[in-house]
Length: 280
Ligand SMILES: O=C[C@H](O)COP(=O)(O)O
Image 1 (cartoon, rainbow, N blue to C red):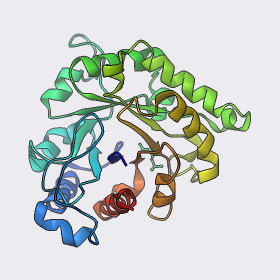
Image 2: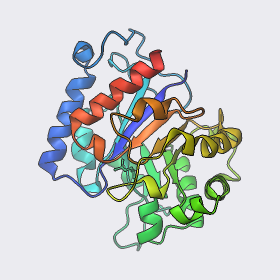
Image 3: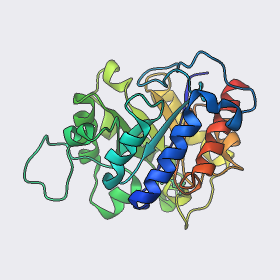
């Protein structure tokens, strides 16, 4: 089995003090001598990640999982400094502009994100599409800019409840993905991570998706992108009870998590669940 990517976006949460506490805890949990406290004999000593894209570092207790964390911009450098340059966990930002620099008040460029220590750029989350005018065209520009600077685009796609009820989920998400990714070379595509996050399943107002509901969208994504991208992740009300079964869905190679991972204990549990799933 390829490496499972398991990460969290903090969205617009956490003070710097809270970010420090979370990141310090993760650093301790990922240290080589922390293996026994979070795993039950599933880690091996290879310390290498399979698949393409960034790989987990040596010595981490999570040898089959690629952890990643996407804080608010304000905490990016703090989290980088705490985790260190060689952390097995990757660091991301929740958005970045497609231009290199310039008169774009309130925006952050990919080179600036990279300078702050980011390795991943989250692109096209439904909250940005709904509230901040993100379009298929801007996701395409941002994916291209992210790849140009050697960072990993984490492209989020997902349909509304209305689209789902009309039976158009797979077609809708494929259109979002194609709009952002068509025209990339095979090498560029191999550096992309896709996160399928149905809008109806996200956040406090969302309801957890069932394995049955997700089978068809992931079959569609797998048919189009399986084996070509670094990962096909699922996101939306992931919790400690449903994580293992979500990872069992064909073509799912990771989880993108909000609330359950905002407490470090929840995130570490998810990493352990994924590690054990990958080992089974
Ligand atoms: O970015 C993460 C997703 O929007 C999922 O959030 P959630 O796990 O709180 O539903």
